Amino acid sequence: MKKLKPLYMFIIFTSILSRGFFALADSNRDLPTVVIITTGGTIAEKTDPVAGGAVPAVSGADLIKSVPALSKIANIKIVDFSNIDSSQMTPGIWARLSKTVDEALKDRKIKGAVVTHGTDTMSEGAYFLDLTLKSKKPVVFVGAMRDASDVSPDGPANILNAVIQVCSEEAKDWGVTVTLNQYVNSARNVRKTQTSNVQTFNSGGKGYLGYISMGSVRKFNDRPPRLKFPLPNKLPKVVMLFDYAGSDGSLVRYATDSGAAGIVVEAVGAGNVNAKTFKAIQYALSKGIPVVITTRVYHGGVLPVYADMGGGAVLKKAGAILAGDLITAKARLLLMLALPEVKKDHRKLKKFFAQ
Image (cartoon, rainbow, N blue to C red; front, side, top):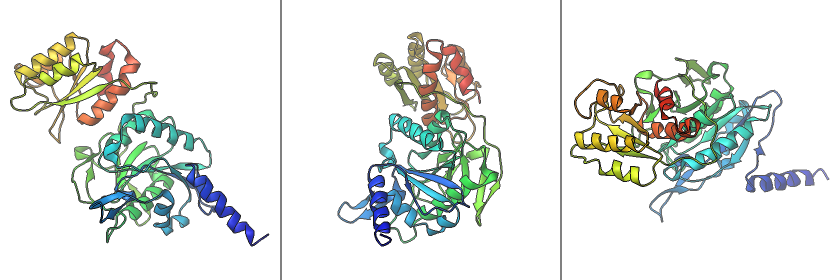
């Protein structure tokens, strides 16, 4: 019977993992427990010579095997949520992911969660969960810029640092973070800044929350103020549009007439659009469609500075919402979650963008 026990346990382990439930690595009662929820991305991909590029190829269990040092830091539970490139993510998928993370964190034994995710839309996914998670336990989004077949993959070290962060008392109360290449970023402020370099995520002038080195977390800053929203039964349709030299506002009008519940316009400078786009925004506002203004500029934010037609001051006076320094993609997610809360009273939306 003793010889059969390991085989029996292996069958149970693989059966549970194949159905997407928790899989528990070798446990140590003296260590905390961390759940790793995998969604895919470069960290779970390998180069396929036939396809001519990286494709999904690595399971959650494979990811953990690539980081043997984890066994000295925490007990690991695995949830294989999905294995897709983050360019294929949607707000609907993030809503399901948010529920999955909350469900996992209900277990009192679990210290927090690590979510492996592709880097293309990681900052958005992290922000969506930061807005919707009920749990106050730490949640760390982590990924990789080099796939698992690279000569020097960055995924294993990033996973190790993410688990170190979850277990660290220095890193509590940060909410959801994006942690890559040893740097810890708040979900609200982080953005991807380089298409291929491992040092791609930063938080601009707001700065990093901390840095992970030699197995410990060094805290730099507190997290920004946190907003919370319940997940609605259905997310409203909110579109992102971009102002540019010579734009005519036709897409703003089209979105207004095509059932958009809200529109986010990425403006230029401190939040300015040209005259034709301004008139189209006025049209959307006249139809009861809230319009949020962001800027394409990396540093700074939207300000009511200019008072000519389409300037930030005139847009604000017309009823548009200035998004401050929140980037366009995140302003869209915030508007999607805020609209069901305020219902028809769009005046209440302004307070959510006034951070």
